[in-house]
Length: 304
Image (tube, rainbow, N blue to C red; front, side):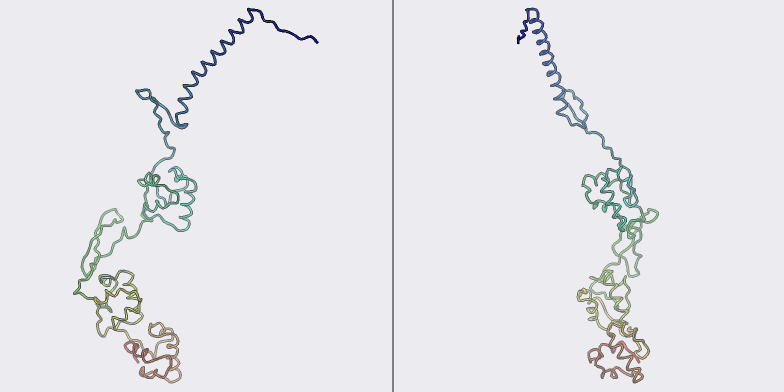
């Protein structure tokens, strides 16, 4: 088998050298031009727009945010509006679930409790939150009427026509002032140091069941945690107790009194059925359900 030999003459070699030189030159130019472009793009953010300052340095500007800012009520805004504000879909779902469960945003600060909401997001949205009047606390619109017992610290509230009015809170009693425990209403009781709306309501509820207080110590029967500091301000007027006729009341009416339980009420009804009219509490002393101490505390509240 004969081998083939390729022999290049002088002119062929010159052509090959020229082509190689041309190719190398092209490669070098590509690196030089492409290198500058790579440095420019590599140092810039893929989402930024680059401009040059006077010194030739690149300045990269952040792209404009796609979400909008507009006034909204988180209690009524729909999903489209919430998404336009920049909230994530899962945050929108959280708002819908909260509202479906009966949750209400009563103040704009309530919106800050939205799960996953960042401080930055809240600060951006807070100026645009508008809570409708139907969802705001009633206390912001309706104050306490001025008490006949005097003024107190005034507060400013917003009314329906967006005007400002001042309402007075009843001030607390001084050390020399007292309240009639059997005649005072909740407003007057709240003037007693240590007593607010909660204790005022409980005092009146227990007083109505008793028929009136005959001793300040009965206040501790309401609750062991009753504020003892309030007791010195409370006095009891004689003759202001409502009595119950044990000969006419039904079993249900009898056991409604705090000092008569079901078995005692049944004993009274059975005594009337078997023996007739009860003339005094001494008639009940033979009943095992009425020990002497029980009869003694019942005495101010019964009549025959």
